Length: 163
Image 1 (cartoon, rainbow, N blue to C red):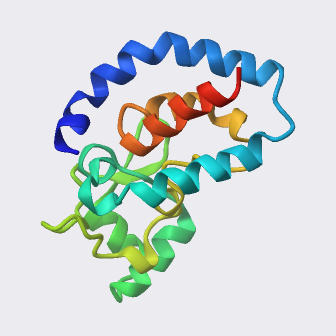
Image 2 (image 1 turned 90 degrees about the vertical axis):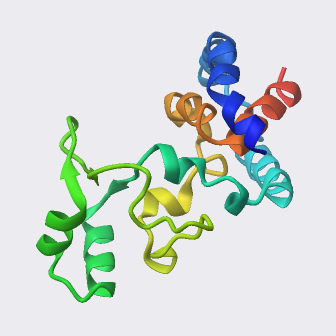
């Protein structure tokens, strides 16, 4: 797995133009069965892939934190939301709350999330490959194939099944 993760940015870069072209066609003519296919591909991939073996998303990127996320997590820490923000977050160029630094502050040495039960929505839904109206998040997906081995595999399999 480590070798694949190390190669992933280059593999994703090599496939970037192909993926952009594919997703462009997908947006223009979306198959009726796309949502069910994506759920199927997602479930197949995650029956083989254990995120605890990887955690590359937590090591290399940070999620967006919604106000609901901040309220939920700060409550777990018995903090006021502003205290949580001051301690862990910053505002990025898009005016969103994100972690002050990566790897994620809440990732332990065994790739476990210390706030798993209250983790941000963005983490819970990552890599977003089983999302409804999947074709609407093509830019995010193209970015995620360079981060997540499962997302890479799902997109490659999707391209084989949708011609």
